[in-house]
Length: 123
Image (cartoon, rainbow, N blue to C red; front, side, top):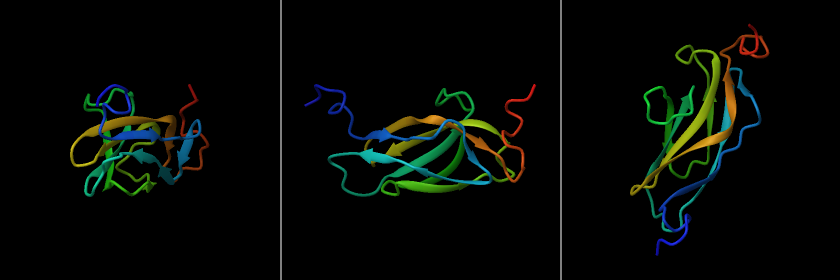
């Protein structure tokens, strides 16, 4: 039955943790855990970078689609991703439902520069 937040969703992303201002310089490995009691097979996880933390408004940058059971992704910030500070969001689809969840911290992308904060804290 659907009588708690946990039982009203078919799929739930329990956690995506990033340290404050984790940096992809130029790579960073994302790790996550997904809970889904009735998962059988299939599905996917889409990984996005979002500058404004408002999912679905069109500002998200898709960086990968991985199998539902992956649990991690080694992201490389390339020329197609502007250097900056982003929120990481995962959209997990188990074949029935999709749930989007933001990571706890931000990710700084820096595709090869030696600057520590990619100009994010300079005027």
